[in-house]
Length: 157
Image (tube, rainbow, N blue to C red; front, side, top):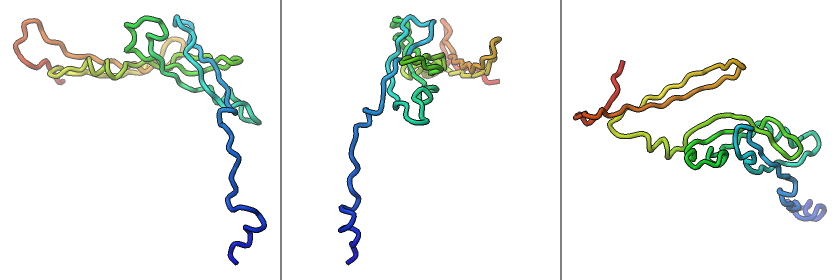
């Protein structure tokens, strides 16, 4: 008949042995740079070194987003998010460097108001030690103390 090969090779599409993917992974501690009070950010998983795939290469370049309140222990900075990028792996510790900063969406939403103008801009800045930073600024118009007009829009140029 049609299914001759089934008698020779056993079942069609024989089942592959299921293994737990977490058995091939190991945990690494992620450390924050020096300026922050709390050095330990958390832990991250990576596939163990096997053959030409090195675990450290799989970790380098990973970006972690951490609240500044968690890093400095000050709850007033909870609306700031720091991005930290893994630069180096020493043993089981991943050393990070500053990668960016932003505000939480709820903080930005609380700043934006009706009847006011939102002014946004960005500029690329090169520091003396050759770091390239892109700085974003956000500003808002403000009502005068004795203002009668409902709107406080910026003049267009």
